[in-house]
Length: 196
Image: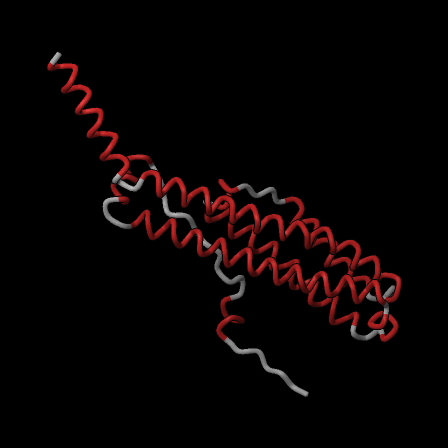
């Protein structure tokens, strides 16, 4: 009978010790980061769905701007070929590759919108204006989703690196998650110039 109580007491201490070691917190924060990553993907998919409509609208007006249209289409295809999961988001190389492809698409879209400025009829077209507004809203949603993901990863990584959670993380093989970094750090450090 004494062995039974000792075994039970050891098990109870182990369970109580595990609950105080941060394992559940780490799991909760890892799942929050996974959910935040899913929202990032959702917003990128929304943008990818809008791009063909925007390209087709501009195509009707800007037939001779074929290179810009081709660049946008190719960048969207590269983005579409990347299948990122929340597990892939924990791999720094895959996250960089994904971020680079999204950056290429953003650059191509910027060039497309600049080209569209040369066509007064296009700028006045309601469908183009609606698509442009949706694209702008999507870019804002992407920024917000990325910010939420960055905050989730920061919370997870902070908890993971804190004592005694870092011991628990080592026992269970948990690692720090990589985070987004600006695609072009030089552009981020330099303030944009506006000229009239």
